Image (cartoon, rainbow, N blue to C red; front, side):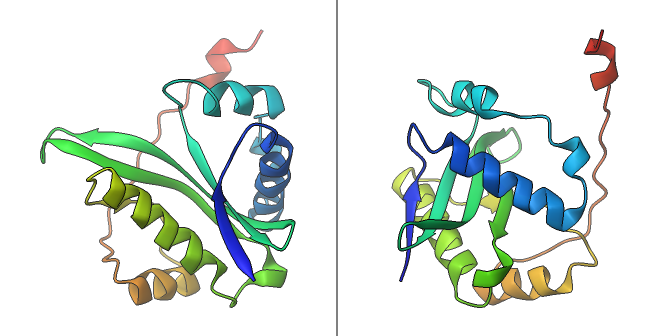
Length: 154
């Protein structure tokens, strides 16, 4: 049976392992720069930089959903910004992703937040079908990224 829980102190090692699994699936693992210490600082403080939901099959973590809160100046309220939704390939098609998304929706409703936004690759047809099945609407938009991270390296 799949259960979903909010990440707690001590889960940093589980989260790092799941992030690395996702990175290996998408082949950008060389871009994973975070570590247990950085995650701990980001998650477990009064106003966290990000939050995680973890999906378990018994005691084994099999997926996660990470998110932040963002504010829209156009609609005048906050929304959830989903960063990653990942399910270990051995547990796909078992409603793990759906359970993570439903838990994210519950958190939003409890906080009177009416919108969850996220990005998905246009060619990721299985993800688009999954999100459409949940009732999400997609629209094509160009995402720009200005990366000057190298400015901070010695």
